[in-house]
Length: 68
Image 1: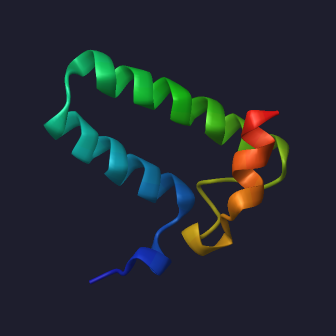
Image 2: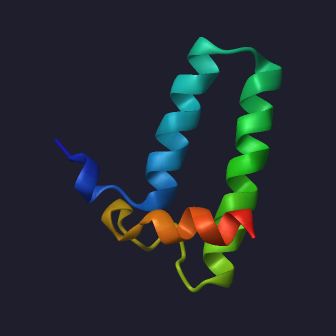
Image 3: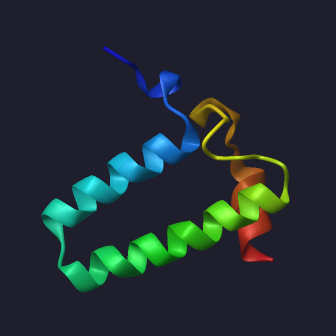
């Protein structure tokens, strides 16, 4: 079984959204998905492709990039 360190950033985000989809309303899930899609665009602009990079490569700098 894969551990969290084996996941790509995109896989971790998708798993998180799956859980949110089970626990929250459709509107909330869409809002989270929209925000995380914007976050993924930020990562792409910073040469951190979420579908290719492991989750462990993500650090607090990414949150700072997104907030700018």
